[in-house]
Amino acid sequence: MPEVQSVDLDEKAATIRVGVIQGTPHAMVREALEGMGVPSHAVTVVDEVPVVLFASVRDRNRTFIESGFQIAFPVDIYGGWKTCTSGADVFHNGLYGFVTAGHCSQFEANGVNSSTAIYQNNFTSGDYIGYEYIDTPFFSCNGGANTCRYSDAMYVRYSPNNSSTFYAGKKIAETSPVGTTGSGGLNVARYRLSAGNSNMTIGLVVRKTGRTSGTTEGTVSATCVDKVPSAGKILLCQDVVDGWSRPGDSGAPVYWPDGFDFSNLNAKVYHAGILWGGDTINAKIFVSPWSGITTDLGVWY
Image (cartoon, rainbow, N blue to C red; front, side, top):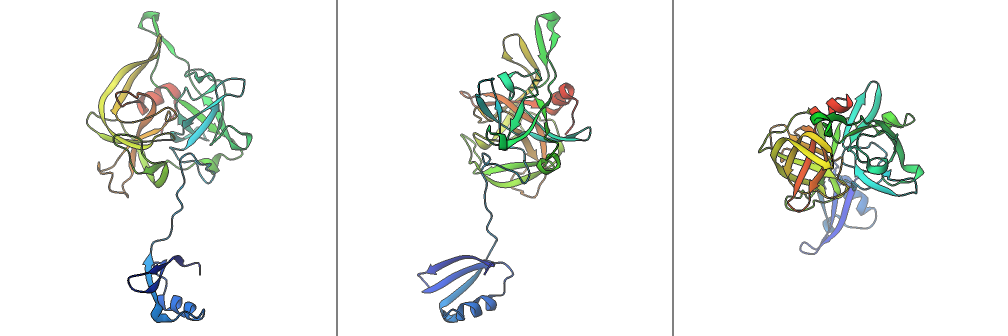
């Protein structure tokens, strides 16, 4: 019977315990079992919620590609590849795609558009989903002493053959358990629907979902901080979260719920930006906010 969710021996009651989907007539189950020679008095029928098959954020995902899932990209011309995280669905100028960290591209070069092929979840031809479409260069700043951008971000256009299929409609994967002092789980517990984007403020509790450390939670400790990811290059006005991340989480969505209560699973969330780096010794997460992403790439969430 397709309505049956579980079968177990209830040792205490000395009966067979049959779990069925809520709303299934118990009498129908008992009649079916009696037809198999199992007397009704030997059966206990209980209601259960439908079984949900959990996916890992590292799995191959083809129904939709929600924010928070693993992506892969080539780092050189010799077949080397690394992983990052899909960050935010974006529909831009009639094109479907998503934003992720700009250094999740060939030669790990933020600000250089190499039309890098992007894959989900591994670097194989069957996992190809799109390519680097917008990644604007750094500009001269500080009197020419440095080059600057407002984000470590790029826009990936989905393959035209599958664009509307991959586009998840601004859903963010959230894993369980949620990590607060270390990595979270990798199995998806739910999908959070986004209400749009919003800036973070100091003291705000936020979460991120990345392919390496799953969903973790932390508190915003600084906003609009200029960060230096490499010599001579400055990322202007970045946000900092006291929270846990690891390599491969780059591109991860950072978000917080309407009503500020993560326990309200029906609450929509606000997308605050994407993770691009961190301090793994002192547990800091560095985030490019949407104001900077839009300034650099010209895309809106």
